[in-house]
Amino acid sequence: MESLYAERACERLVIDFVHRLDLGEPASVAELFTEDGTWEWPAGDRMVKGRPALGEYFGARPADRLSRRLMSNILVTVTSPDTATATSYFTTYRVDGFEGGLVPPGSPVQVGHYEDEFRRQSDGTWLLSARVLHLAFAGPTPRA
Image (cartoon, rainbow, N blue to C red; front, side):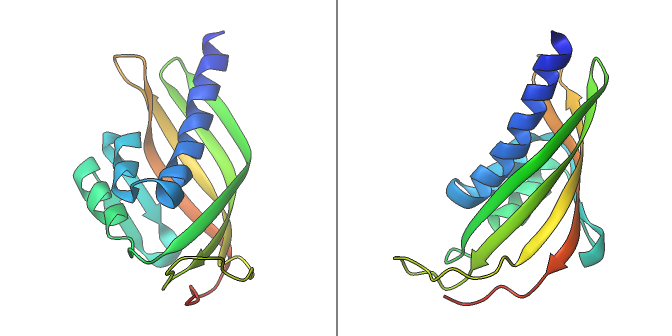
């Protein structure tokens, strides 16, 4: 039963991450990471480490950006009582310059997958300890 709980808690983090970016407060994504957590985008040569830096990084998202990320194929593997890994696919639709209303549909600007590592904290909660973004398809963010 503990393994099922761990899997569900980690799946929830994967979904909460994109929900906060798209519909919540982007800087709050940092709360989903351990204090020493990392977010890496090797193709973009970006590495952000530590909760304060993660909050600053994700909080710098343009205020006029509209985005929706679709998550799928979330496969969590519990590796010990306190650690787990996951691979999940994402598709990102995004425009900058959003001023309200409906935006005509377009192609996604990114399709790829995340490779995640999770750690269970002393209070039993699970957090991301590392997230690596891998892009298979990418293009520029259009203006609305």
